[in-house]
Length: 361
Image 1 (cartoon, rainbow, N blue to C red):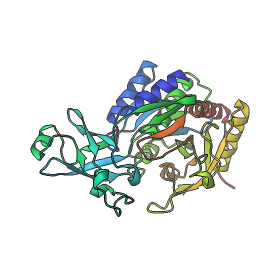
Image 2: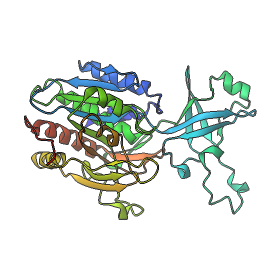
Image 3: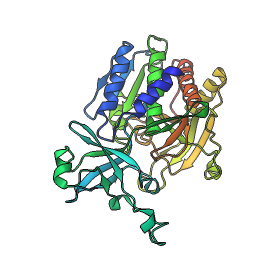
């Protein structure tokens, strides 16, 4: 578990807004190379490692996204305050007074999302959520010229300031647990799968642009043409009073699989998993003695929704880890769930038989 912990912490501390994932990919590329694992990058920036396996078994693509949500600079005011556009499903009620970093060619510039002084807040303002277009970010420069001299331009990526908070009981909170926890689990699977030729051909993909309308993994799947696809991402923990009516997903209760997801607004898409993969994961959990949690949610979506439609169709299922406080600056997961997820994935790969039937009917 210690290497998983350190990998997760390192990945959480790397800013990587959608479209700007290369620092995350560079860290992962180096980590794979240190294990003697070759990888390649496509035109969009997806990082791919392929492990050739038994050709009589269906090929598998397992993927997790490297990018995180945040903002893009849209205007620099004369007084040096910065206006932004929201990128991805940022929780607007959790934005005010957060610290951020703004990307430049030379690195990152710190800033803070401004909030009106409490002493001057009117009764009407006290309970109003400030929306992203209303935000101003203060970098301390004091003028437009000074901000631009620091390298900040329109279109610059803005992320919450990277941070890791180690909580009791092996729980980790901070930025971009969604989906750096998935990236760390996928890296652990790569280490475990290396040299195991009896597995199916396995394509591990650290994908881009998931928070920007689910774009990256679909491109990788079009090239890799997998028979089976598994997406690793968060699953909504429902073990707190505010979430209790949404399900039975417990932080620390083990990895999970989704039996139904549907966004329900905007992008009308989701995944109903292939029954053979549900059975496979249940068998893997039984074999390893793992608890396997179940999720069925409206309002969530992953890029598996589009991967399943590639080519003649891909047998698909979402797997993941319980997480609290999704899409905020302080998301939270349990390391034991991630460790269990790695064991579950490896066991599932070992159980895939030659000639596994994926056609329905």
